[in-house]
Length: 400
Image (cartoon, rainbow, N blue to C red; front, side, top):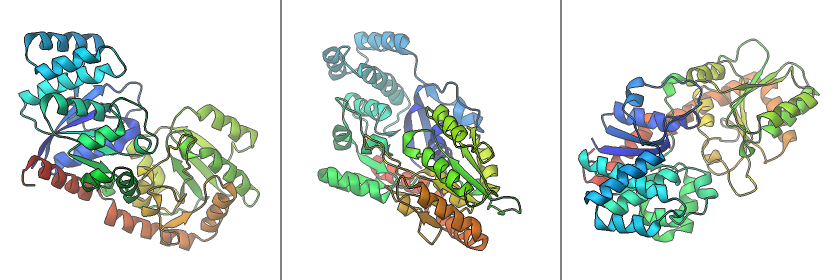
C-alpha cells in the first residue's frame, strides 16, 4: 500500500468533510496517510471526527515561529542552495509564506522518508506542494474541485504552473476533466477523474413518512448555491399548497439576507435556516425528508459548483434530487431517473418540480431508489479511495 503525505490549508474542516472521509477511507484500506495542515480549524461546528486521525495531524506553526525556524535551517545548510536562493530572491512579495511552509514540511517529509505529497484544491496547499517539489524534488499531485479551476485567483504560482509541474492532477467530474484538458492539452494525459466518495453505510433510505412533505437543502450560504431561488420557489409553492416544510442546513455570509427574504415573504412557517449540522445529524434529516433541492448557479466571476457532495449524500439517502445542469451535476442527476434538472435562476421551474414530486409520492420514491443505486455504482468512498491508491502507486512506483 502507498504511503503519502496529504496537505490541506485546514483540516479537518466542516465545509470539506469529503476530504476527511477520503483520508479515513485510505487508512481503512491500509494506506499510511501523513496529514499536514497549514492552519488549525477554528470556530467550527463540532463533528464526529475520528480522534486518532485528528490527533496525528501535523499543524504548521504560526508565521513568526515558522519564519524563525526556517531561516535557522537555511543558515545551517540543512536546505539546498536552490531553496536558499529562491527564498532570498522572493523576499516578502505576495505568497512568500508558501516557500517557508514548503521547507518546513519538506524537511519533515525527508525525516519520514515520504516521497509523494498530495494537496486538495488548486490553492494554498497546492502552491505549497509546488515549492516542496522545487526544493526537495518530491513529486506532488493535487485534487482540483470547483472555483479553484473555474475561477482561479491570480498568483505567481498559477493554475497553469501547478498543472505543468504536477505528477498528476485529479478532479472530481468528467466535466472538469474535459474543461482542464481543453485548457491544458499538453498535460491532458495526467488529468484524471476520481469522483468524491460518500460512505453509503452512514445513510439510511428515507421512509417518506406520513407527515407533511419535507424539502431539504444543504450548503454554504453563498451565491453559487442560490438558496434565494429556493426560497422564492417555496413562496410560489405556498400559493398551491400549505402542506410542506423546507429546511436549509448550513452557514455563510448570506444568512442575514436570506432571513430577511424569508421574513418579507411571510415564509417563517415554511422555510427554516437551521445552521450547520454534524454528519450524523445531516444523515438523520435526510432520512426524514421527501425531496432534496440544490439550485446551483454560476457566480458573477465564473465560479460554480462542480460535483456537490451533498447531492451524493441525498442520493445515498434515497431522495429524489432537483438541481440545475451545471458542471458535473448531470453526472449525478438523471432527469426522470433519479430527479429533475431545471434552468438556473428559475424559481417557477423549481416550484413546479417540487409540486410534481410532492403530488406523486410513488414517483418520488422510485426516483429516490434509482438515486441510491447510482450512488452505490458511482460514488462509493471505497471505489474512490481505491482509484486514488492506484494512481498514487503508479506515481511512487509501488504496487497497490
